[in-house]
Image (tube, rainbow, N blue to C red):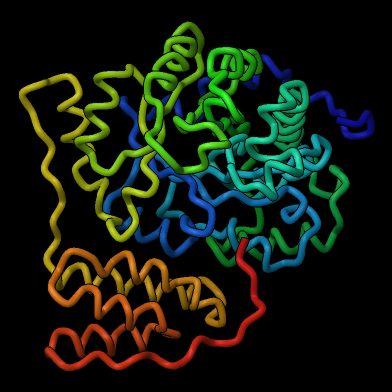
Length: 400
């Protein structure tokens, strides 16, 4: 971090060791919603929070450059609802100075925590030195964590967005986002916790060396996906590597959460029992299943009682359709309606495991509005042939 952004706020150690944060109050094992690029948008997160209430929710990752200097629509990934709390903003990038500024914005927006993405396997992201690319530059990873923590501390100590070097127009945009969410222009000043999400290596498994390096900076939590960058999402997640990371974290005050190939709460129970993680983040298992977290308390009880099992949630078809339509309407209410085609993948995920699902899915992936969704559902329930929706809308809108 450059010298002109230094501020005599909370020290790195004091901030890292503070227990006055939501992570300290969460029950164990922690069962949360993993961040997924292009998936965990505001309407989806709110739907999951309403249907099942995970212990912690992460936004999809957002570039720190977009947060600090990008066009206004790039901040749509940081829209959230009070119902999602505790909700953590996940950021990615490679410039410590920009992370310092972005931390101010995350705090100003009232997020409960800041998570640094050091695990995105996207070639374009990693090749630029961000995401999982940081595994190859561990010293830079340290600098980024320190800069983000200093930004949090300085904001809590009273520094404004413009004091941190951000433009007045950006400060006004953040104020407007706050007003739309809860009618208040800014969040109360407080020190929020810093966490990291990463992988077990870049092209080879180096989980012990890499996790020890991250632990040296004392993040409150580290979430580990059990694959290397080279694996992307191929093969099976290596939970033995996650277990080794958890063993290292157990010697510290940092929480270690596992992630990868978790499709049900019964999977959560098995992973916690076998690998001694503090918790589990569920990602792809929630696709088309936003109610997955409903029985998380039963899952927690089953971890310590081998005689217990966790029921799989099987909502009625009518409830499935109702939740799907509610999410479609939320999308129109929260996001730009021109972006509705981005909702189609969610609609497709809902259409699975029931008679006529394939035909409904084929119609849903061309829906351009919640009215289209309601019509397709009504046609299915009436046993009528499903008509294709209107052609996809032309749009240049971008949602990070």
